[in-house]
Structures are given as C-alpha cells and as structure tokens.
Length: 413
Image (cartoon, rainbow, N blue to C red; front, side, top):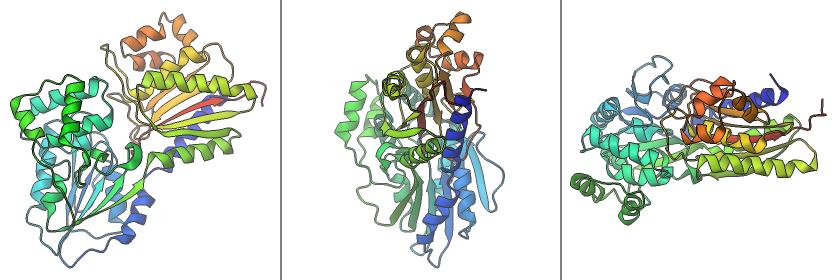
C-alpha cells in the first residue's frame, strides 16, 4: 500500500469516526424535557440504529420504532421494534414501516412526547403514499436517474407522500415532538433532510411543478392531484436540533490532514452538480495548486449527482473519483478519493473510490478506457479490478460525502 493510500484511509476513517452520532445525540438530548405522559421514540434513516442506541443511554422511553436500510441494523434494542427497508428507492417494507410509525403515534395526547431521530436516507426508508408502490417507485427512479439534485428530488416526493413535508409531525399532534437531526443536506435545511417529515416545507407548489417540467416527468392525474395537496403551514408542537453535518465532516478531515503534514483547505461543504465534473475540477485544482511544491490537501463535501447513461454499476463517489483519473494521469505524488460517510455509495457494497496518477494506465493495461467506463456508469467494476474501491461497511452515520485531493512531493520521506 502506498503512503498516499494509507493517508487517505486515515483521513476518511477518522472523519467518519468523529461523525458518529453517539456523543452528538446525547448532547442534543440535554435539552429534552419529557412531560408526565408517555415518551415514544421513532428513529428513521441510515444512522437510525446508532442514533436510537445513543438515545436509549440518555432517555427512558415507553416503546418505539427504528427504520433503517437493509443491513444497517446492529442488533436488538430494548423496547424498540427494528424494521429495515429499501434505499435509494422506497419498497414495500418502507411503506409498511411508515404505516407502523403512523399507527404508533395515533392517539398520543398533550402530555405525551415523541422523540424523533432523523438521518439521511429517510426519504426512501420512511414513505407512505396514496399512489401505488409501483407508480411511486417509477417516479422516484426517474428523478434519481435524470440528473436532478437532491433538493429537486425531495420537492417532488415530499408532496406525493403522507409522511413528508411535515405530515408526520402533524400526525403526532397534540403530543410534543422533539426532533434530533443528523444532516446530510447542503445548508442543513430541516425541510429537506429526509424530505422533512417533521418540518414545515419551505418550497412552493410552483417550484415543485417546475421540477417536473424541467426533467420531463410524466405524471398521472392522481400524482398531479397529490402534488397540489396543501402541506402543514405550522408545527408549533415540534422542536428540532441538528446534531451533525457535512461541514463538521470536512473540518475534521482538514484537522487530520494537517496532522499528517498537509496544508489543508476546505474548498466547499456544499458541493453539488454532476459527479464527473466535480471530480475533474477537484483534480485540476490539485494540479494547479501543487506548483507550490508543498504537501497539499483540497477538501470538499456535499452531494453530487450522476446522470445515468449506461447500464453499469457504481455510485456518485466512485464516479467522481474515476473521472479524476485522466486528469491526474502520469503525475507523481497525487491521489484523490471520494467516500460516502454512511459507508454505501449507490447500489453497491463500496463507500467510494480512490485513484492516483497511475490509475488510468492500470485500467488501459486491462483494456479499459475511463470515458467508456463512465459512459456505461460502470465505475464499480473498473475500480474493483485495480483495487480502487473503498469499502467500509455501514458506518452508523450519514452526513453526506467527503472528497479529498492529495499531493505529497515524491521526494518527501
């Protein structure tokens, strides 16, 4: 293993470790003052199990529910029902889990409390709709493959939902809702994180219809009628705390880089746009800035998108990294990695990808050209053949993606 690869593992490993929600959730719960009635817990998202586990160390609850992605549960939790469901597209288990949550909070009174723990991935995992599952899945797949950013995707699916856009929060009334949120959304907008089940929506119907028109979504009359339904205008019984975000992930990565001897700069914690373009631009910035001749780390966080043009396998982080390979080709002392903090990147078992100045030529030696691989959206298989996949397994957190370009002068020890 090269020194750059070892440094990459240290950087993303420590950044993710410090983004785990345990301490942050317990800190947020210092402000939680349950009333004399029942206290129930509902935890939703890729980090739902870990958030619920941390909460149980700080609060006594009278029952509840954990809804997380397949394979992200880490075992039983006392007093809580644990359900796993589909991501990135809702499945029958997502619908069933959401109906279970709605039934759980039905009948709560003014003296009762709901502790609502929310993390990224909830938009797919926590879902109920008057549309058929097949129609709902079709709309979601088209949104996820057309190049729409996550805020555009969420604008549409929250209005098709019976639990998003504040509707789950409204269903809990008159009970008090204390929401602890692990953010995976640029700008930490509560109405966008997991499509805002307990937050007043900040978008308009006109903006939502504009998304449908922009990407040519063909919607049935029933779907259009659901889009027009009003969302809750106020949720005075809901109180929310954000306990972690991508900006913290980037700052931690920068601290680790400095500890390894790099000059570290966070370029942005709101990266968006297409993964390929982001990877190419980060690599170009790295080559330009390396002229100073000092160890350098350029860091960005956020959530890019992939435009589906082929039938391969991959995720946005793998595609971002692989797109950087031709830019770095032939250079010494350069590397770039991109990783999802939740440990999963798209429909794969990898968290992301790693490339360096020799990646393009190693692929060429196997008869593979990067542009052709990207056109087929097959970054997973290409990176796997040359040992470029980053595999962490489910991490227990979800605060978006981390991408880092590294330069270390080859002559350095």
